[in-house]
Image (cartoon, rainbow, N blue to C red; front, side, top):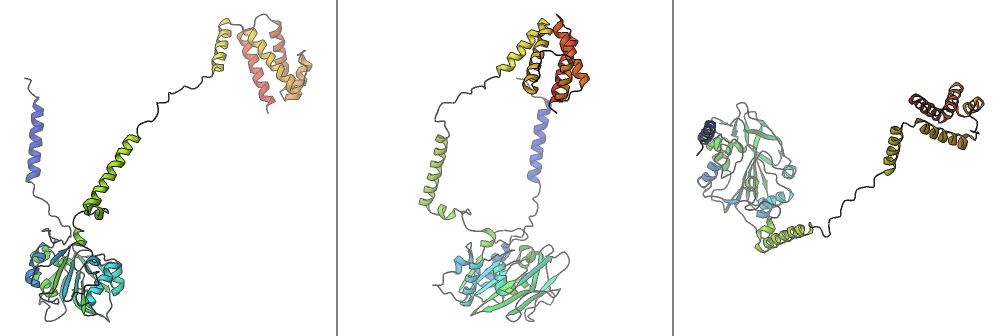
Length: 393
């Protein structure tokens, strides 16, 4: 058995060593701000979610449906419930906002901590949220003296320091501010319920709670909510989306019969395309275009004349064609190509008289000689070409 070259063993060793190094390499920390209850990364919300039973009395029900689907049923009137949204972005649409406001007016609380709440909710509550990265040391605190910490809470660097640039001061109550005196936590009453909006969701992240000891801020901000609410819901729709299929066909895929019908239709379409792609008739043979035999004929005849060296014959044919053209175009008598004829031809065509005289002299020479040289044939051809050039001007 032939042994493998040494460099093959070297390549195998290097590949194995590289694979082991990649496997042993410590994983890089994921700093993505998800605030999802399943994420243990720095800006996930795993710690907060699993401590809510201590803060609120019991663990919330996790929802992965839209607020409209949760609160849009007006036939059921809940009361004393809490609906919590903690996410980097909560882009509520028009139907979500209508359902949430009806839910609040019925006597429930909605707690939102987000850097962006959507145009519909912002316009409804007359809000304008702005923010910048916390690259310097910024703190935040609650304004209620009984809840405010003696030492303000540090905001983790790298999160968005969002705040209210504008809000309805006549209806909203300020609950929290940052060290730059920017409001970042408000409450507004609607009917029998309240809506809380906090613009620094990073304060509720794993990193904030474990590394900056901000559990006091979270506990104080939740103290406005009722303990042991009648219903307690935690939103994951704006972070994880819906449960199951996320495609536009999810309603069809949700039902077995519709799902089977969809796959059957797709299989039928594929089979139709496969069978229709086959030709229904024999392949049409490619017919080459008809060749121009006139060109081949001219080339053959010219080659015969050239091989025979019969220059006088070629010259006489050129003279015949020339005189026929003169007779039919200028109505001149070509029977006697003398100097007088050359003068008339010059006047008719614009060809210089001296050239016309030389051309007629050469024509008379060709007619009188038994054999002519190559130079005579070339000169005659040149004069004829010049004649047509002057005649066409």
